[in-house]
Image 1: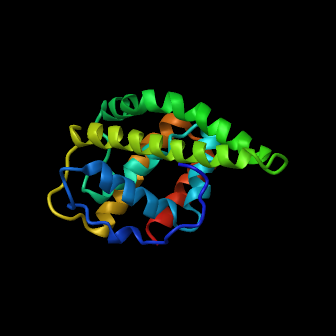
Image 2 (image 1 turned 45 degrees about the vertical axis):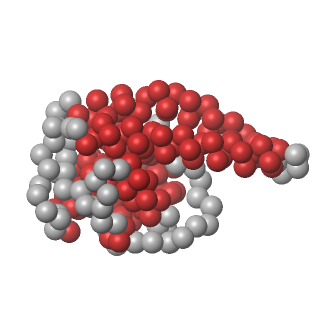
Length: 190
């Protein structure tokens, strides 16, 4: 995700896990924007992205899956889901770097502003593509899905399980990464 500009503030609990099952990517995108817009969420996500090369969309996917009743990642599922977004992520990284460079440049070069805005819009479109691919890969996964709407405690446990599995992969036993993850979990459920 990109650095947050001001946008609408909405609570995660407003997302209906059963809404529009034919278009899971649309629900994932709306859910992600809602969570990412919560105070402190963008900072925690970007700290994990910048410090530990975390895929923010994959972080958010774990929370979305928990909201939809998935208890955690099945044995090889995280590998498969990560691989689904790899082609888009290969483009997103350099594009993100270019946008960040332009952000700094636009202070001294006014003509860079228009290009910055265009690149940011393209980056967000690519983020949506990555999320569509992640949602599709996740939907066909073998993880056990609980029936009905998950209870809050089950959702918190599932989000923590998703988050722990991903953080263990990108930053094994790193206290700073675990703290950012704990912050994100707290933000998501307060």
